[in-house]
Length: 201
Image 1: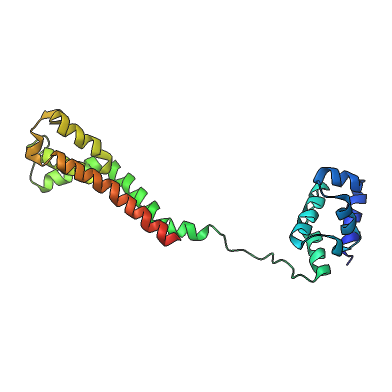
Image 2: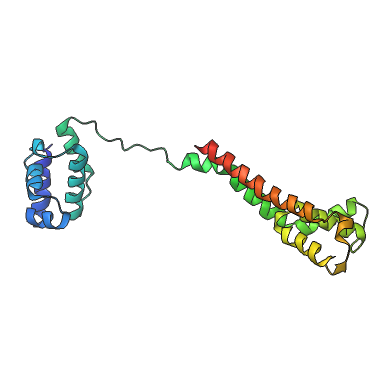
């Protein structure tokens, strides 16, 4: 197998390019290109920069750089790169994001089926649609569902729910209760995110 220098020079000549053409396009100095083609690696900077030169050289000639890099490694005695399957770097994040994704899905599902939940809660409490029990079940659901928090505020401000006038304090809808509910829905997600962040790190 030929060494790196003749291999690169063969690629360049096959494309009809000069060292000056490559130097102008890649911004790699001509003396560095000459050192690559003559295998005089002592005149080149650190290996990480040399590999960058090789990649730029090959990409300019529209050739894959892997063979040239392997030749460089063979010449310098550096272990060949492994082309086997690599463990994806994002996999740990995906696993750690699992609880958060589950929480979001549960939130959407619960919000979508909230009317059914209120109906079942009304039946459980022995009420019927439009009754005081149904209103109470609805207000309880507002406390439990963060998506309905604004509805809870509307009940307190306008003293009505679903078109029915009511005394909100009779159903436990008071300003301290609303403030506490709002704080819980702000603090609990914050603590959950902090826990996930610490666990991820």
